[in-house]
Image (cartoon, rainbow, N blue to C red; front, side, top):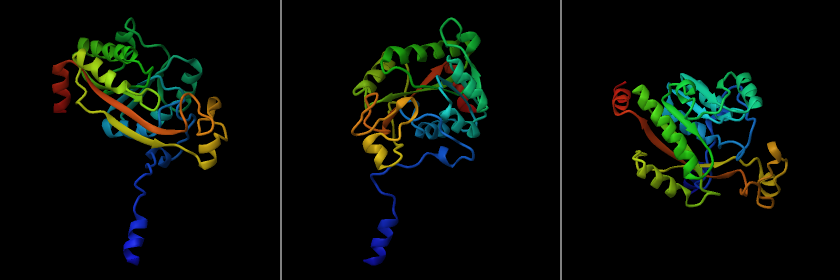
Length: 240
């Protein structure tokens, strides 16, 4: 019984979440906190999808996610509109295009990549706009890629189903799967309950002091992975 009890205690706690690989990277430092940025576990998910590939993020803020993905990708590029964020990204060694992406400039601005990632407004109109924009541009180049975007069900309940329906109606394939990314970036129990010490932007998300609709720095983020671009480009990418 003693050996069984000891072995059981050594197992991971079933109700706890794992730690992101970002924390184990030499020199990595988080400059933002959830929900000011995506949870760091999103970087782990992107790494698993894009090993040795090129990754583009639309809207990076201070670049925590791309800074973590960078050692595992052949190239990471940020498309960011705010000059102060662009400066911070360059200081972290991340290539940045400091301009808003639109239908008018996509041919010039959108880099070639295997993965395009963003976390934008929760409504399907915003997400579908960028999915279609990237898809149409890649079709014109006879290329293909995957678009990965996030939905935060902790505040946008029921939104994942709406996004799936919008993708299906537009003829996009997302593999019929919603990838649930569980995370907990709580510092300690004091922070979990009171929100102190405050994080960037006055972030006091906690049980007693909810912030931006969140009761803490934990939750479940849903990632949808969408195939975009030309069929010929997709077949060529699968052969590589």
